[in-house]
Length: 113
Length: 112
Image (cartoon, rainbow over all chains, first blue to last red; front, side, top):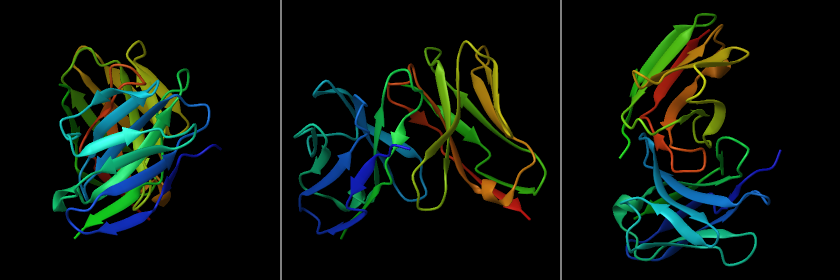
């Protein structure tokens, strides 16, 4: 079964540092998403991406965040200057019309110290 | 925006019993409602979903019901097994490709 893959699985970074979280969506999917889940809390939407541009974003996705699809396979989330409250599990997801429900990746646990 | 509430937050049942998790939503434009199961430290996985033109959908031991008038939908798991133990999240969306609004999750424990 096709999977969404994310790297790294765990990243520890100093507050104020930039991080890039990487995702490889399922190859024939056209819609891509980033969600985050703070420990013990619900999954929260960050951003969706389609046709090489952001289609929706939440209030969480401020100027410190950016997304990019640098090539035909990778989809990245960049946090420019990390804060302690950015510590969370970040999930990438992808979707193809005609198939209901996203497929989530296995997540990157980001710890900001 | 959409607000999804989920109850209960924790649920313990004896193996073989049924479990019911309920969600309500606020936006009448929502018409796609997936349920995700998340085991500890793992990704959410879609277990069943329902669209607003359907009142009930069943897949083996799992069923989902939707009452669009009352804006609530429920997950029913029958003949529960220990491997059903996980956190279950409901979600609502205008369309399957739009952002999902997740509920706060229900931690289900099935006691052998």
